[in-house]
Amino acid sequence: MLTALIMAGGSGQRFWPLSTEKKPKQLLKLFSSKSMIRETVDRILPLIPTERIFVATNIQQVEGIMEELPFLPKENIIIEPLMKDTAACIGYSALVVEKAFPNSEMVVLASDHLIQKEQIFRDILVKAASEVVKNEENIFTLGIKPDKPHTGYGYIEVNKKDFVEKLDIYNVKAFHEKPNYDRAEFFLEEGNFYWNSGMFIWKTHTIIENIKKYMPEHGLVINNLKLIIENEKLNEEEKSDRIKDEFEKFEKISIDYGVMEKSDKIQVIPVDIGWNDIGSYPSLEEVFEKNQNDSIIRNARVIEIDSEKNIVIGDKGRTIATLGVRDLIIVDSEEGLLICDKNSAQHIKKVIQEL
Image (cartoon, rainbow, N blue to C red; front, side, top):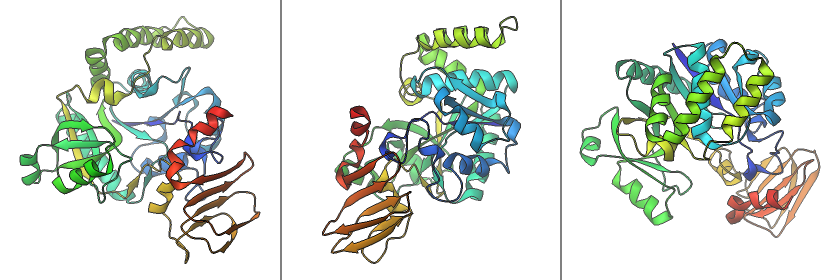
């Protein structure tokens, strides 16, 4: 009974001006004629039917999500009344999924990741689900085999001894925050470190119990939410109001901090699936081919004169000319115009704050 939860409540601030509050990154068509969330759903449809696919999002994005996924049951769109990070999102969503499909195996995915080796990915999910059935107390995550010293990802460490034995599944020794370059280089050289993909597989009741165990304050809210969800006497408006009141009590914290870094039941499955979390514009350099000037051009007619190593994106059909510039990100959209040094791409969210 494999179910899926796709987390789609992010605002994609590092992709402004393409990404906005109402149309964030997961609703953009960055790589094909499909939005990223549609690609995410289509990727798992051969394995998981629509009635067992759930999407967690916020009220601002519900309309866009439903337009992109009209075939999903309306009740499978889980609306978070407040953005309280992934521990709250996953805890609340697990209650909804558990009520619909008791004791199911649940895979948790982001709505805006790129996975190029789709069949291998599905095979891995089948393997992970079978492990969950055999070991219901365990939590499984997918670790990406690194091919470079990446500073934009967290890392999962496994025991060196286990690594030498080349196991298919490892007990997690530790989670590490995004490192600086030297430390990332060390992780790569050591060989027993994997990128943290943020993809999980577990029993619904297992993650609920883990949240209660390691996050007792969250656990109290989870208990209250369960009572509200199961209360047949409440109409939808009353349920919505009470759920929002409970969400106010959630501390804003990720599932990684709240559970993953504390539990001794975490196991990682190493994978090579052509994965990229597309966290910012420079990530596109790992996906698209560059032209003769070492630039990436998307959806625009660009005239490059004495220019190189730029990322230029348009969505208005206008000609964009670059003269004597390099290592820039230039994005022209209806929402605004961005001109940014590549090294400042992680700070694009500051523009949102000013707006």
